[in-house]
Amino acid sequence: MRMKVEGSCHCGKISYEAYINPEYVFICHCSDCQIMSGAPYRAGVPAKAENFQLRGQPKTYVKTARSGNKRLLAFCTDCGSALYSTSLESHPSLFMLRLGAIKQRAQLTPKSQGFCSSAMPWAMDIAGIPQIPEES
Image (cartoon, rainbow, N blue to C red; front, side):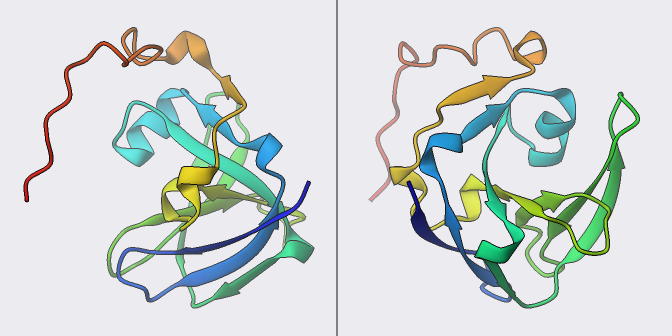
């Protein structure tokens, strides 16, 4: 299954189009994703390089995981929005797009989650937490 998605940073300086498979949407509970996103987990979806077209030049940061693996993380220098991560290869084959930057994110239900041993104990079921109405 293929779906076209459009993404951008909050300020609009950087944008992209990609074709993804919605069956591969995931949640990552690792402590790096918690810290880097400022949230209890990060959601994403992979896009093959040939199906990813970037407009604008993001800032990148190389993160080293506990495993020793290195990942290149891309974000906007103006607004700080996280955009994707990829390998350190000069021509990466896969981009892990951050769900929060994708306009169609409401249509992309996660199908799997990883690093659950690092998950916040309450993050696995938030249905019972009272909802606060939005301000008008």
